[in-house]
Length: 494
Image (cartoon, rainbow, N blue to C red):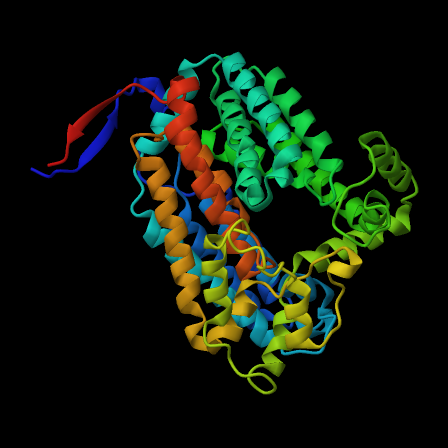
C-alpha cells in the first residue's frame, strides 16, 4: 500500500451532468475553427506560416482541453498563439506579405515562426505538467457549486472585494511587503470566478448576483490606469466554458454580441487611452492615479463621446496592431547575436531570483523598466518610465536573447511544465480541490497569457499570487468559509 492519499468526492449523479461520458471530447466549435483558419491560411501569400499557425492552434487545444474545468490552460496558450499568429491571417485577408504589417524593419517571418514554435512548446509543457485529465476536478467543483446557495457566493465575493480594496489602498504603506499584499488583494478574482461558475451551473438560472458583480468589476476596471475592464470579461467566459453550460442558439447570439462589444470597447480604449492616462496621472509622466474617481469617469466619458467613425476605425487598427506581438522580436533577431552576444541565461536568472529579494531586505533593488531592455536590444527609442509607460520585448524574445534560437525553448517548456504542475496541485490537493482550487489556479496562472509580458514580470506575477493563495487555502478558507469544499472521503491509494 502506498503512503500517499487520494481524495474521492461523494458525488451525486447530478454533479456530473454536462461532463463528457466518452472521454476528453473537444468543444463543438473547434472543428469549425480549424476549417475557417485553414481556409484563411490558403487564401493569401503567407500560406506556409499560416498553415503552421493553424496546425499549432489545433494541436494546442487538443493537448490542453480538460472538460468540466475552467480552461485557463487553453486560455494561456490561445492568447499567446493569437499574438504570435494573428498578423498572418490579417495579411492574407489583405493579400500582402506579413512583413508589410510590421511597423519596424526586422525578420518578421522568422520571428513569427519561432513564436509559434514557442507556443507549441509552452502547450507541451502545460500538458505534461498538468498530467492526464480526470473528471473528478470538474465533478467536485459542480458538487459544491450546486449545494451552496448563490447568495452565499455573492456575499463571499463582496467580502473579498472589500478586503481587496482595503489591501490595495494600504499596500504601499507596507514598504517591502507591498507586492505580496497586492498579490493577495488580486485573489478577489478567484471569488468572482466562483460566483460566476456557481451561477452558470445553478439549476434555477439566477443571474442577478452575477450581473451585479459583473457591473461592479466593469465599472472599477474603467477607473484605473490600465485597461482592467478586460479581466471581468475573460474570467466570466472561463467560468462559462468550465461550467458546461449548454448555450442555446439565442444565447449564442448574445455571446456574439458581447464579444463584439468587448472588441468595440477595446478599440475605443485604444483610441483614448493615451489622453486618459495623461489626465489621471496629473500629466506627471508616471504610472500613477492622482485624479479622483469622479474626475476619472468624467474625463473618460468626455473622451469617449468625442470618438467618431474615423476614431473608431483608428482604434481598431491600434487594437489589432497591439494584439500582435512579434515586431520587437523581429528586430532582436537582427541585433542578437550580430551586435550583442547571447546573455547566457542572465535574464531568466534575474527573473527567478528577484521575487526572493524583497525590497524590505534589498532596498537598493533596481526598479523594473522593461523599456530600457527594448531600447538596448532594438535601438528603437520607445517610451519608458519617464513617459508613464513600460514596453517589453516579451518573454519569447527575451528567451532568445538568453539562449539563442534552439535552447530558448528549454526555459519555455519548463515554464509551461511548472505552470501545469501548479494547476494540477490546485485541483488535486485535498485542502483546496474542487471549485476553490479551480478558481485559484485560474487567477494565479492568468498573468501567463500574452507574449508581451517580460520574463521578470512574468515570474513575479505568477509566483507571488501562488504564495498568497496559501493564505487563502490554509488560513482563511478553513476558518471563515469551509463550505467552499465538498465533503470528501479520504482513501489510501492502491
